[in-house]
Length: 264
Length: 264
DNA sequence: ATGTCTTTGTGAACGCGTGCACAAAGATGG
DNA sequence: CCATCTTTGTGCACGCGTTCACAAAGACAT
Image 1 (cartoon, rainbow over the protein chains, first blue to last red):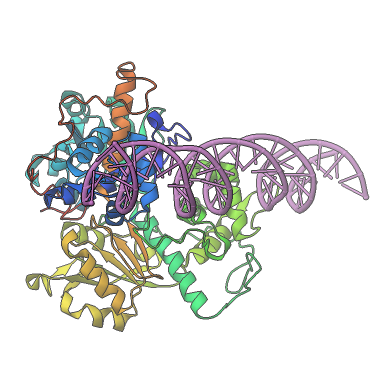
Image 2 (cartoon, rainbow over the protein chains, first blue to last red):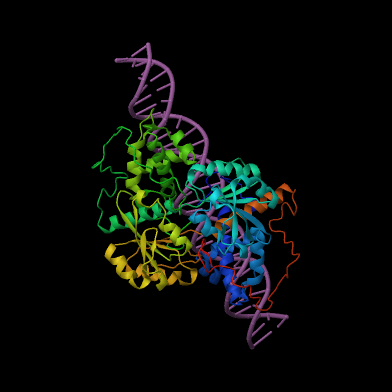
């Protein structure tokens, strides 16, 4: 799921397909688990099963990285952990700022998976003056007035936006202006950023809606072709004004204001 | 990003491509915003811009739903909101259970985007007896012993897993056995489920790692082709045992135990 | 009623991603 | 040193998704 914008259609970074890049973290996690159990080598079949992918796909993915792996044996776990980590850029330290310390921001701040993967929470930033100085997950919250200074001083290039949607673009602009070039967006908005800036989006609401779609389909199928089985889009038309153009209706603020995962 | 398993390769539910389904919520959000501003109609160009996609793609997406839209004018906002909502199954009520009321689970419980989209938090479930009865976001937490009963009584078909990875599969199995057929998984694990059950995964750690990859690439490029510019995978080999096979190394628990977003 | 202008809906081409199936490579045993 | 067996690495084909470009459809003005 994906880059809200900044698509990079066929840019295929350094020859590694985007789809492969998205799977590398999966492999890395499976490999790390094996490493902890002191398993020396693993076959593509085993590793693929652990990562939940096809073994042919896994081999092809690894082939983009190079020919690590020994025929007749498999892959050296430790070696592969290092190679993937290096490829993903996890061998260096990535300072990260989290903007918007609501429920979600606080949860993110306390996430243990940061440090172990090369990520370090450099600062927590919130616009509420009452939050300033208050420690969250052991890190004192700083006021957003100091955003630019923090980004600059710590050399931060990755920012996490966990603010309400209303201010997300504005926060994004400030982050980008201050030098951030990668953004993980939890606010339910489409962020527009200049070229060269990557945006990835996480949206609970969208995930649930996709699940609901499939759930509905399952329920409908099970009940025996309820509607037209062939006609692509049979319009039931019932219980709905065919061409409303009614008054301003004004469905009252149906969310879209706070990031997925965040109390009002 | 995606189904941890249960791929549904070409099943293309009811003729609507999976990629299109994944974008419908985006359109719906943009349309809802327009609806609130009482905008009567919108062109594919405008809506596409608001949703952050290509206008041709948007038109093709809508064409799978049917021929709503008037040539020379555009789409009726209210009508389209209804059609997409119906297609996604949001016109009905979806009871949802959240299992694992840690930091993340609590944040999810308080998310306002549920109710407005047809989702309703039917129950919060946690294995910690101390949590039982304690209200979170106005909803009392129930003990996991009652999981099956809750699922059954409320007719829940969608479950959210926000537990540590160690128990995620086990929770998943219980949910599925109790009748849940759609799962949103926040735990960093590959869940295996029987056919007919959909799993979607949200993983902060993976998103950050993908960002780090692109960030590294940007930094490397900027510094002028640091390494071999053509050779696919030039192995620097420096600073790493070429073929470790060392002792059990034992990198101490590098996360992978708590869901993305959840304090240890 | 007719012409013009806007915007949809879609046919067709292209490119990426996936999976099959197999040859090459190397380990292992005799 | 040779035979056999395992497992990688990849050529190839296929299908989905994206995008272009345009004809058809309808609004609107005259």
